[in-house]
Image (cartoon, rainbow over all chains, first blue to last red; front, side, top):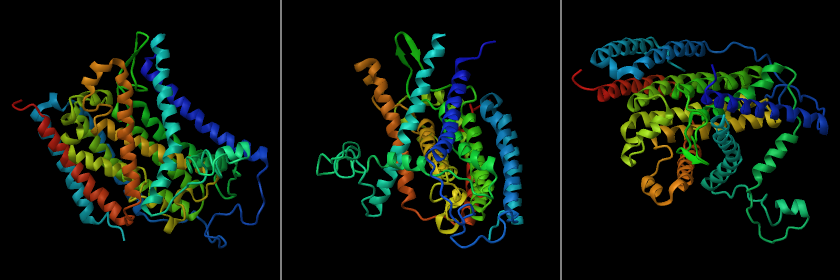
Length: 124
Length: 364
């Protein structure tokens, strides 16, 4: 089985972009090393906190809300994935398919309403 | 074999076009923001005159007046960025820190694969399609690479091991995935309207004059898509991941040298990509009024005009993005999330249902 020109072209393009990205990364390393631009200064390798000495670790706890958003994203993205086959073939499915997708969206819409009512999307 | 070789033409055209136009965009944005803020902007590094390119090479300014002043600023910036020391902060995760800019640059570039930039052109008896690849997944490819773009930002923010970067990275991830859901649903209703997933077919549908452009048939989708485009690219008014007033530089606070340059480049390529996508989906792609008439008059040369029309539409969208950036203030984070989850997603779902209702063959 031969690869179609389309997929091959997409691969070649991807290869070009990857090569370009890695070349830039390599080039800056090379220039830094070759031109010897490195200067040693106190605090240079520390995290930037507006000039004052670094305090505490960055590996700290952060708001649980962000995890919640990630979870909701998975739910709603799967919804998009489920709607996709419908969007592609909605003309052949006709009215029956339309009512079914209406029910599907209604259930998800109820879910969204529930989320809002429970305050899952409240930020302070 | 020949059709494999001819594929190189669109590949090089798109690759070179994108790479060539990005430095120009940086210059353009600096100039536009300067004029909006009643400043002059970069006007020194030009071709002739004092501080010009030729003065650096020849040693004399040649003319008294600056010609193309500021136009070579991106070149000077690129040289500066490349020759800056490339170092990794001691606390950072070395591998992820190095690879994050790469992953920020890759996805927006890959989105160009499925975007048709011009009509088929016949060269030496061989018909060449001016699109890198007409993949059968079409617009799904865009969704796939758009979701990858959250990785570069999240990786960069986390690997920097700095509080500002971490906050910027988390914010960016939450924002991008929130608006990605809305964008996915919007794209679904768009592909229902065109009844195809291939962007090539979509542009084909829009060939019948101004009235057939997607903008008029999917106005709600158009507005939602533009808002999502801003949010996905982290552009103002949605640039919370890097809002300089709170987070220094956001996820790229710890980056320097060309690694920062790659984040920067990635942002502009993403702007260009969103412009190209909007053009292909809603603004008629490379079609322009009078295309058919011109094709009869000048034959194959019409391709040049089609490419120019496409470029003009993309640039118009990019300029719009810049204009908005320097005009509107930034959203608050809760406003951003409210707009995404309580505004965009319900409207996008409703739009999907309405689109299905309108396009269904009645009486089945």
